[in-house]
Amino acid sequence: MIFEDKYFQKNLLDMNRFPKNFYHSSIKKAIKVSLKNSNFPISETNSIPNILEIGIGSGNKISIFKGYKVYGLDMDYRCIDYCKENFRGEFRLCNIEKDEIPFNEKFNVILMGEVIEHLNNPHNALEKIKSVLKEDGIFLLSTPNRSNLFYITYKLIPNQITHSYIDILHVKEYNRKEFKNLLSIYFNKVEIKKHFLGMVLFAKCQI
Image 1 (spheres, rainbow, N blue to C red):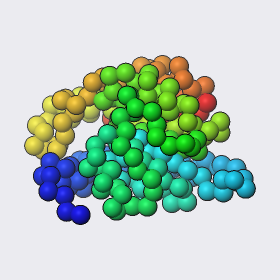
Image 2 (tube, helix red, strand yellow):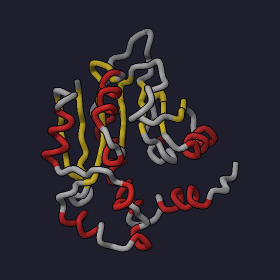
Image 3 (cartoon, one colour):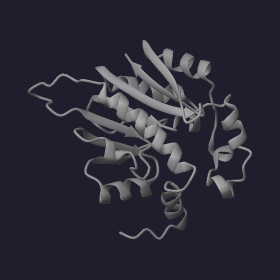
Image 4 (cartoon, helix red, strand yellow):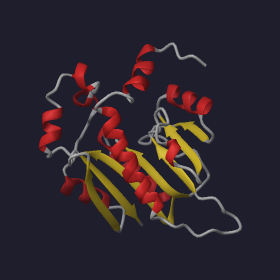
């Protein structure tokens, strides 16, 4: 399929441009480390661990999900169509704030990168995520660090250079304390690390 939507094509292209490519490379490394350090028990009924990515976009992280059965959600039908055509997995249209998660599964890993800052009510999303996370599973998510000096400076650079529209699309941004306080409502174990010059907060959560 050739996508005629120029805006969608531009977003796919921008993922490979600096600084977005450097930014996403940093996040992918953090995810790879978390997955490598996670050992899930193998049972007769579930020999292959599964992973759900919320906000799967163009599927740019799927390459690091080797050894996992992949599930993906996005609220943009163009992203779902693109992933269905280009990757193996189960991909569904879903607005995580408003819709129920459309899989009759519980997951070893749930990933949500750069989504929470777009949500009007993150509590709805976090409640749903917790309900489909396995007892020994991990929830990985990232968000911009609003108190980081580099990030504050980055937001001042014209969009034509950064290929970013963060000022328009972000509903609420978090600093480290706010981020941990929010996640701690739903998860007993919350570890937060900083990546990409401290511009990104990367959290690993467990029930």
